[in-house]
Length: 453
Ligand code: NAD
Image (cartoon, rainbow, N blue to C red; front, top):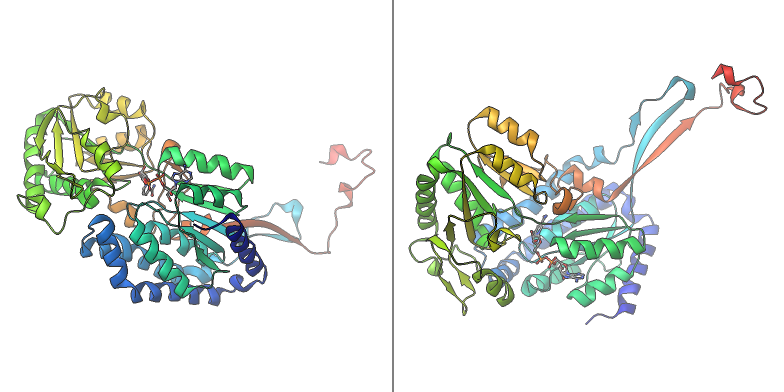
């Protein structure tokens, strides 16, 4: 295990490297982003194998939900970096003339990125793209739970970058605690809400700003005015992708009573279409990450099981499962499920749905299926969530122009695209003045001048 003194040495060397000014050069940053992409491509096979070993992640999903997001983010940063780094000219009141006002983006220094296990590659390296683009040094601490991916991230990063610029520190809770003893200029954490609070408390000791990308129970509301087949397919896809271990997976379904039976049948049909009659044999269906999470999840499989319900401990397999007739009081409605179990609550009155959502912690995502524009407007106005996707699931997080993040219990701060650059930047306010006109009235003695203001 890495020692505290080695961690201190890495941080201190990174700080020294940062102060050489090398990372401030835009062409240096672009070159490093290109190197990162090339390194990932060189290790494509090893990364794919690691994700298969950790989560049985299908190659298609490795490309679609891990590589492609990183490559899009790199391409976006390279394309726009010259503009992003430019000082932004701001307006100025007459009393400050002659002069000009600017916002100068500057890198923060040394960042710490702590990743989760569910999309373990992408969620550790996507924030790194922002750190590099904005001219920082960084330490990445991947999740120890996805151990194969953690090792391969270490291999890629140590091959591509010198440690005094970008380093990986592998390890579990103890290692993270040791990292948190150091002073960083920004901490970017992706994980659960409970751990997020620990990170923020530790960061406060050094007055280090944090971005917390957390989770929560993301509701999926289904009204009657929908295309049933398309809605069912999109809900089933978003819920059972990565075996439900997606921070923005629809956690539970709130469905209009009059359409419920038809929708559930269509969701069941979609599941069969995706994973066949025996999803345990499907090459396209992921496994639960660990025994601990498997045990936690199978406790939820009770009540009116509409579909699925099978599990196998040797293979850490839990079938795509739909539980009907769930009530707000059931234990499955307490915590984020983070697994392939979809509880279904029916409603007759949308006012009750809105009130119930608003009485709970603000979710990371909210899904609404309806063509009804009035209802769309009402849900957007009357509920709060990190993001919203109407008539689809998950896909809003892939839009580079839409910052991604939570609100309230689901997180602090946003990233993706320009927002990732902003996370690791300080916008320095600068006023430039000339020596021309000097308003002497401002200077003491003040006697008789108050009336002039
Ligand atoms: P986690 O909070 O258990 O772990 C995340 C990281 O924190 C890991 O690197 C881990 O080593 C470290 N950690 C764990 N306990 C710690 C402690 N006591 N002190 C210091 N560090 C500690 O989260 P997870 O289980 O890896 O991921 C699941 C959670 O993450 C879910 O809640 C999910 O919704 C959320 N998530 C959010 C996003 C997002 O983008 N908002 C993305 C993926 C996952």
